[in-house]
Length: 385
Image (tube, rainbow, N blue to C red; front, side, top):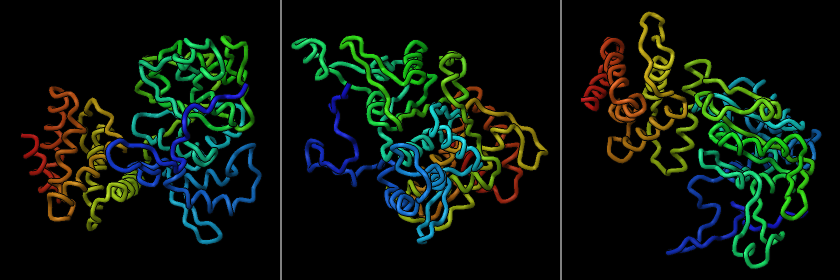
């Protein structure tokens, strides 16, 4: 059964009417899709890639892993790392997509699950936009299909009235679909994936037809550990996935590297002025987050209480990016403790009662006594007052 092309493919370069003002093109997107932002790297990898490729894959599994982990190609092209972590995690994830098992990326919030899923889809299929965003209100139609009700009422069920979901489109085109925050989706809606993943078919009983997946189809889902017990996956559905756990960065150095890379990328996309070295403040943010996460200082000598939030790497990136904007627009062009203090306070104090006590205790017992942190202590005291 052919799937009607009812939705224009995002990022195709076609101009779209944005209302007042001139039309928008793909190159003007505030946050380009991975396949556009890193098109040069993907093209260079495809040109250098002489290894076997699964059906409808744009790159071989080796090249997909290289795209995520980074490297230098024979022609000198530098492929920037998209994921900093154990190589085997990426290799297992890529290999899973080359089989008939779907991939579930699991981890605490802020461990780059969405980022990795987007780049995997971009490298494998050249299109990361076949996406279902999971929420408590995600309907079954978002995973299966819906209807154009004007056509349905005037002509009854027909292929012209059918509105394919991103998953249905991926099945018919042999591409990679993505489902974000799978465990936030109601259990009965989650289970619509069982037939799709096990039988590789999507029945359309209203038309007496079905859509069968063609080679190249697979699905990447993400879920975080904090959602266990919210809408726990059924055992039948979990068996259809190969689960890969994305851990938090193993060392402070790795986390500092990740934060620095992403802040630089975000700064370019937001057209923020290039600032002098901000490594000291990046390391300070990472140190604070890791100590509060782990419940102990870096030297292991002092135990501290942990706040209710996750204090993930993604939140550290947000804090530093906010500080970068403050320093550029309202400071002297140098990232200083005062630029990051308010961001850290907002990330740590999620519960105004309990978390504020945790933060004040950490400030007085750890930050106040640490050499070289006096300016940071004063800035935090000022915003906490």
